[in-house]
Amino acid sequence: MTATGTTDRGGAAGAPGTFAPRPGAAPLGRMIRAQALLETKMLLRNGEQLLLTVVIPTLLLVLFSAVDIVDTGAGKAVDFLTPGILALAVLSTAFTGQAIATGFERRYGVLKRLAASPLPRWALMTAKTCSVLVTEILQIVLLTVIAFALGWSPHGNPLSVVLLLVLGTAAFSGLGLLMAGTLKAEATLAAANLVFLLLLVGGGVIVPLDKFPGAVQSVLGLLPISALSDGLRDVLQHGAGLPWGDLSILAVWAVLGLGAAAKFFRWE
Image (cartoon, rainbow, N blue to C red; front, side, top):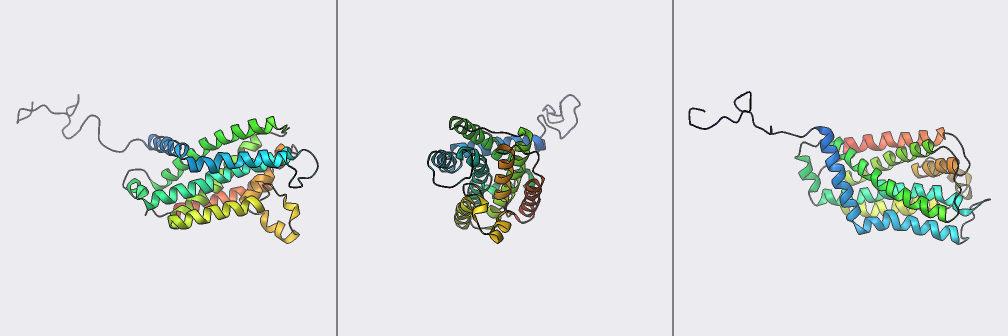
């Protein structure tokens, strides 16, 4: 008993000024997991984001595999298209969807409130990237099932595919967060959708890069979407090993994008 007749709440040790449970921030890993789970639930509940990330890639895969619109070269169209559509799924989720959602979170003050929490800026970006990876797994499973139904015959090492997808996700996630953290929400919405459409046409997703002039090919080949789609196509269609050139391009974009996002991202 204390001098005032109340019981000290210091626990077994009886140390004054301590409480059970002890107040303070949760362990960093637990905070990241909780934020990633919240981000994933919000993403899956957003109908507009699901349209962008799931419905559009699925429709493009089915349409261009069934109708001879684009010359995809020798072999079945689905063998050429599926790697590009997988790359498009990563682009739509990690870049376009994340940039738009984060941009409006910033506008409505959600990020400002998170900034007052113990969650560091880099941990928030990590949680958002983890959420993107979960969504991409669902996308890839769905697209793979549809591609097999259309007669897809993949080759190559699955570990090479996973490495390409992870690096591609890191690259697009960094660029999406950079855009959302520096531009106004309306500008992010317009720019993200414009970039999505431009890369859909000029990123080797549906139209082969060799259909473009030589000088243009050289520039387009350095884009992360081109590196991801070409790398996946080399492995899944042609059975190549690790596409080191494409992996290097994606790694550079990932380092630059995530580094710039960590430095220039503004909470409000």
